[in-house]
Image 1 (cartoon, rainbow, N blue to C red):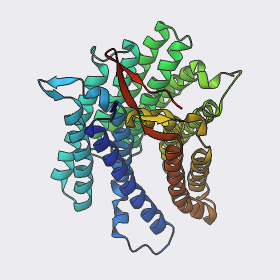
Image 2: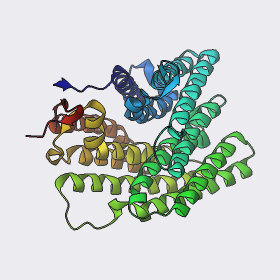
Image 3: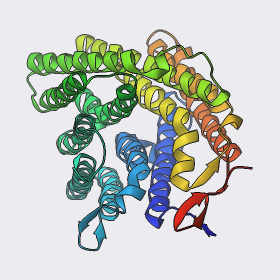
Length: 401
């Protein structure tokens, strides 16, 4: 009997993603403290300038890449070198170098980091879109569009920080948004999504990305704004088609605890996505006051909730653990939603009331509680490494007792 374990590169990916999350949260809460008038003798709060790089490239990008690393280990880039290892090396070294470059004001260091992120994202794109990677070719093209937005964000970030540029922020968020929509398309295909619709979705995804990149690079206000609004409208249509075929939006006769938990998470995720898109449109039209709320509605609300909702499936598979999914608890979903409500609506209310500033600031600590609840949930459902028992040359899993 051999105990199955993930390859070492998976643990490296999880560690680097967790490190990016810890740094990003520390910096974010410190900056919120300063912005709300609290005494925070933490010079690292000025690192809010690279907070988005850590969260988008390091946390979200890191986790999405890590989910695929075991399969990427079997995908040879050149003789003897799997594509997984340079992808992880380039991505995370790029994240930390770019962050360091912003901290110490070194343009050369920041550029080197962004070039490494660009290289890592291209390797990931090559793997996900390759004919050697199984899957429907149109869905793979949607995945490719998502990852291309990560590459284009690295380029856009050369001239403008994500932190203070609404169009680069939107472009950066397109990476996880369209990636998630591609994953939901895989379920939609099973639920009756036709090939023609998938072709249209792939085309719309690429046009959405290219319009967003053009908006970020064209600095003539009327044209740039029009391109961004057009991109948001296309993204909204992409989302609505995904919702139309998503099984989470269909009434099921029987649902176990885990199915109900996942469905609730997916429904909440799409609420935050649609709200975030509306707020981005308001930011473009009005010009100020909605960027922070829009960003966190998508980054924490949509992406964070989606990760929590799918964690009982993704993490046990990635870590080769057996899962007791019916032991899942709603606690992380509830606490994360509370944190999202406080952050997004606190940001919006802060223009009219000091209570909004307080709610926004406290949301960071509620988010920490949500992370603890998330870890507790994983420990509750994951029991042990999955054993591999060879019988007549065929690997089999030991039945769950």
